[in-house]
Length: 152
Image (cartoon, rainbow, N blue to C red; front, side, top):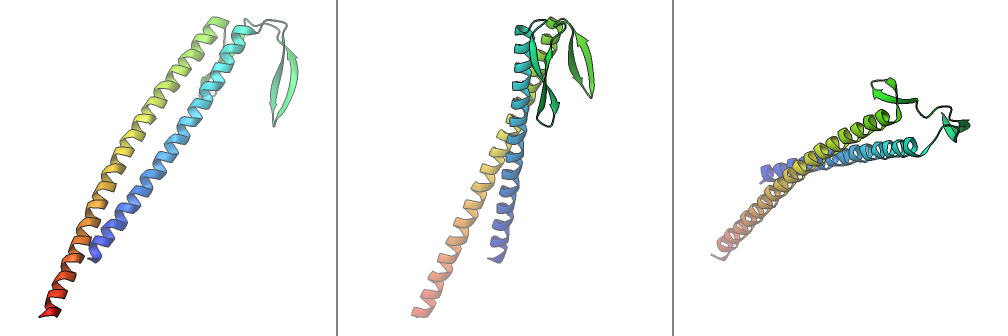
């Protein structure tokens, strides 16, 4: 009977680990969605701003400076890995749309991973319930045997 309790405890620990992993993956999705939102904002800005417009440029630490856009035809787009390239408006939008597609793909992959983890969690919960039922049945049988032996 002690072994059954130990196995239940182990299954419980596995469930906790899976829950933590799911939580981490959900945070990862939230980060991807936030990045996608930033890409959408950049695309909107590229499509609406014109040379001569005034914008607020972040300096870091929550500080901004007003600046006039000199030339909307020269847009610098991050390529990843710390690299950036100057691109024309349409090319910049295409590059940003490609980034969104990659983020969508990654979000789908992580959601699939979450689904797999949830299935694994459900299987473990089912095993744990079956073990508990078996242990309860064994206890009931032992109590009945003890009762019969005491009645004789």
